[in-house]
Every structure is written in C-alpha cells, then in structure tokens.
Amino acid sequence: MYGTIVAVLRGGPSNEHEISLQTGHAFVKNFPEERFTVRDIFIDKQGVWHHRGRPVSPEEALRLVDVVVVALHGSYGEDGEVQKVLERFGIPYIGSDPFASFLSAHKILAKEKAKEYGIKTPKYHLIEVGQDVGEAVNGVVRSFLQPVIVKPVFAGSSRGVSVVGGHTDVLAAVEQLFAEGASAVMLEERIRGTEATVGVVEGLRGERLYALPPVEIRPPAHIGFFSYEAKYEGISEEICPGRFSKNESRELMEAARTMHAALGLRHYSRSDFIVAKSGIYFLETNNAAAVGMTEESLFPKSLAAVGVKFADFLEHLVALALKRT
Image (cartoon, rainbow, N blue to C red; front, side):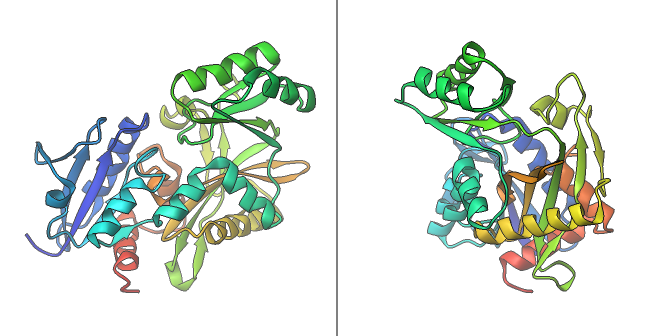
C-alpha cells in the first residue's frame, strides 16, 4: 500500500445503481497507481457497504482512508445523505456538502435559485404526494402549451422523464411516478431548442471557477429529448465544443459558473440548458456525485476537448478535497 488512499463509493440504493457502478469504475481505473491506492467500496441496493466481496460497516470501510470519491448517482449520494456519514467520521471527500447536494438535487429549489440570479428557466409546477393530482394536472394542461415534461423532482440520468400532452396522458405519467415511489413530481414547460451542458471545475488552470466548453446535444429525432436511452446507449450526437455563437457560449459558461456558486457546490458540477430562439433556459445542475463519468458521459469529453487528462483531473480533485491547492 502506498500513496494517498482513495475510497470510491459506487452502486447505492437508487434506480441509477448500474450507472453509478460504471462511473465508479471509471474513477477506480484512472487514478495513477504510482500515487494512489484505490479502495473500491460497493454499496448494494439495500444500502449495505461491501469491501473485497464482504459486507462491512461504513466505519470499517473508511478506516485509514485519506479521501473519498462519492460516485453515487441518485438517492444516498446525489441528495447528500452519504456525505452526512462522511462528515460524521471527519473524512475529506470530493464533492458538495450535504445541504448543497440536497439543494441542487431538488429540481424545484435549484430553479428557484436560478430565478434569484436572473437566469431564465422553463415554467414549472410542483405536485406532491397527497395533493389532488387531477386538479393540479388540469391547471397545468390549461396554462402550459402541450406537450409538457413530466419528471420526478429527485432523479438523475433522465430516469422517469416523459414528454406527454393532454390531461389523460399527463395524469397517467404523474400517477405512474407516484406509484414508483416519487415523493414529488414536476411538470415543466417544454422549450424547443438545442440542449447544452456545461461543466465547471474549481481551481482548474488558475481560475476560481473554470467553465468547460459547452457541449451541444442532439438526441435522436424519434426520442425527442436527452432521455436515459439517449444518454447511455451512444445514440445521441454530442458535439464539443458545441456549435453555438460566441455570445451563446459565453452566456452558457457564465450561467454554469453562476449556478455552481449560487447552489454552494464544491469541486465540480455540470449544468444543463436549452438554447432557444427566445434565449437560454436553465434546466438543472448536477452536483459532483451526480456527474456521470462513464465512457458515454459528457464531462470526460469536455475535459478532453480542452486537453485535460482524466487522471490529472482526478489528482486535482484530491488536492481540492485535501485543500492542497
């Protein structure tokens, strides 16, 4: 055993378990062996931690660890819950603290923050468990152009997202999400335009908040939006740097930096937007735990576009977490 000991947490109890495994694997295999010892920690769908094939307590898994990488998409990682465990043990970790993680993971609260800072966002309506769903849907169908976006308030990787129109179909989509365990659902105005995403890294190349070049996303026409399938099956066209005007690119990068700071995020994040004729609209921000690092993910492609090797990026993150920069 030598070098800095890094524990990578992957898996977890969310419906993004499989993607988390892939993101975690990307971290595990890319830390330079001559400087890091990587401890691969698997968390199963019941929330049990495992190391070297056997169940262990979090305390045992984290013993002698210098820094933790949280590669847990969805609940337990993206929402800040596992960060509470790490803070209880006083272990440095890459990514945002529990409150900022929750704030960014909550799509409605993140949109409210965007509005505070003058950033456009599509119109939206929140429906929570216990509300009269039919009445809420009826109001949205009357006031929003159809179709609308239906999505869980807490979810990533476009899990549970659908594009539907009309009272019957929207109601069915909302009720389906509640039946699957969602505690809150957001109905969002559909803005037609080009999807874009922008990564932000703290302290990279001497900048307090370094914005990576915007990625232009072109999902297949038959899907119509950047769905789970479009994200991870390699069927979308992803262009980096995107073919945006200089002003659009500048505005996208500035908005991503603004949202990273406004949400109180740490180390790195990725914000999603729609570039339309009527302007640029904020959709959501992914805190570090929610940013995919698979072979199909956008963030590593953005790093490569500006000549940053993934291994160097990981070393930079460890330095941030250990406050060595």
